[in-house]
Length: 294
Image (cartoon, rainbow, N blue to C red; front, top):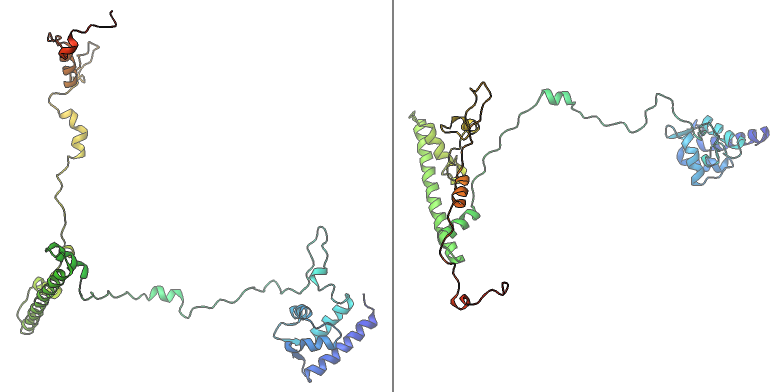
């Protein structure tokens, strides 16, 4: 622990150093902290500067009173023993003492979020509906052309190219005819002649490929039996397998169950007489007796 004279001498030395660096001002920039520490008799290495800036640097500048109080604390507590966190001992049953001043309870840590210029409420209540994208202009469909070329019997590149050129020529002729019809429809409308909406749409959109229309591919399925009929179908059979005993009130002899096709075949085969025909045997084995019996 430093004596009172040592503390006062250190405070005086720190005050003179601060005044020489401040040039009459009450604060100095933190860039002059290293010189202030050296003039006050402290180490000016990076560790000491960081330790001092944690307490002194609050608004970007270092005030004189705060600097002098910090110097007094450093000298009085043994060159910063109270402020050096590595030298603060743990006490059983107590929280560890802090080595720096924390802000008050009203202080909020972290960076201030950047607010959007347009709040969410304005976006929700002024929603702008999007516009439907325009239909893309149909270009060359190489996959379709190659498929159709194969279907039409083209087996090499030369034949496929010839078929493709002929197909595109036919397609261009149809497109020219479609444009001509579209001009005619526009002319009729300008003259007041009524044009059917279906005809106009058909000309504007052009011919559709099979898979672009409302076409269902495949065979029509056979109508299935309704589930209700399957569930109650047993009761609607005219000759049911089991006798209807719903009207029987007194106990009596139950009727015999109805026979099935499988039971009839089994009974018929069991009643069949054995065949008198001798089983087939090769002639060379007919005269050979049984070794087991001999």
